[in-house]
Amino acid sequence: MTVIFVLAEMMEKKSRAKWGNKIGYALVPLFIGLQENPLDYIRKAKATIDRKKLSMESRFSFTSARILLKLFGVQAAAALITRVICNTTVSISNVVGPQEEISFFGHTMVFSAPIVYGVPHSLTILFQSYCNKMTISMAVDPEVIPDPYQLCDDLEESLVMSREAVLTTSTLHALP
Image 1 (cartoon, rainbow, N blue to C red):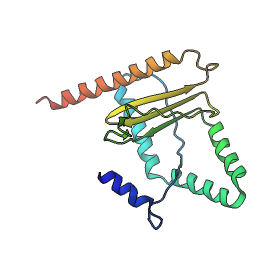
Image 2: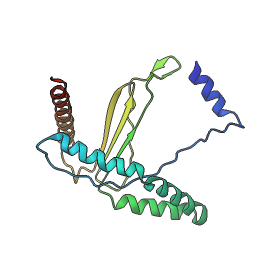
Image 3: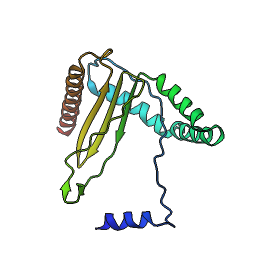
């Protein structure tokens, strides 16, 4: 009931709520390869992401695209974003979803699986959480990745290995 009330307040004409997507991006190197300890890879990736979060890169990319849009129009802004996307190998997105179940007209939503279509790279991976469950969606170019099911199996195996490494490490630290 509270969520509906808050949404109704946000929809009022004089609301201070801001509507619309505000998308900025940060370019991050993706290191591929098996590590002796999967946690080494996770620590390296986390350090890189933490540095990127502290930087102004995503805000700068959003602001520059916005200024370009206002000064030169949609064509120029689209050209800039397309150029950046065309010069990346893979895009990965994670979206934090709601913690509570959502229902529409009495029908509960079971899961949420976003996907982006038409991007100019061979692989797009999207992570979406919903009610403490994660859904992973992939879009692949079959000419570059002929067996996307093997890629999914490899990703699942990597996640399982990482989970086992975390559980093993936390068990070792818990021992006296």
